[in-house]
Image (cartoon, rainbow, N blue to C red; front, side):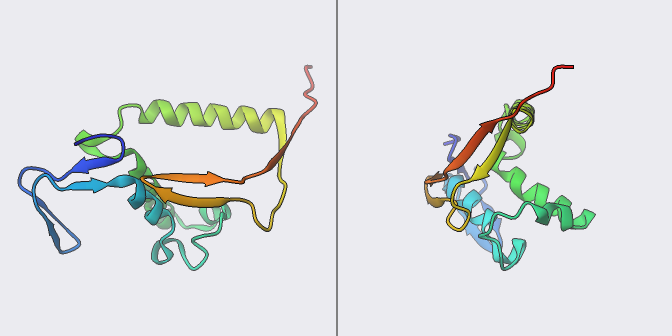
Length: 138
């Protein structure tokens, strides 16, 4: 199956990190993506902390590895998401417009959200105060 959350091992099988996977084995990607984003080996001891500064602090080699890791959410090669480029463009434009038009602040910074994974990553209780900015139309 090549759905959004499962990929199938090719006809010849595959070996990943020394473990042989027989042909047709279904691999759930949703939980793998979640686990990659929380890997203390890769992200450091604060892997569970939302800290965007880690991207600014990383050297070029580390930043490339970080980009390749988060890029796996879209798949790769023949199983890659066809809409990846469009998704990135839409996200960039949406985030830029939101930040341009609104001031955002987390209501409870000590407990900003709750997260769990069940096939897909789910978050809830993220309360954000949104205030419209006064834009100058000069």
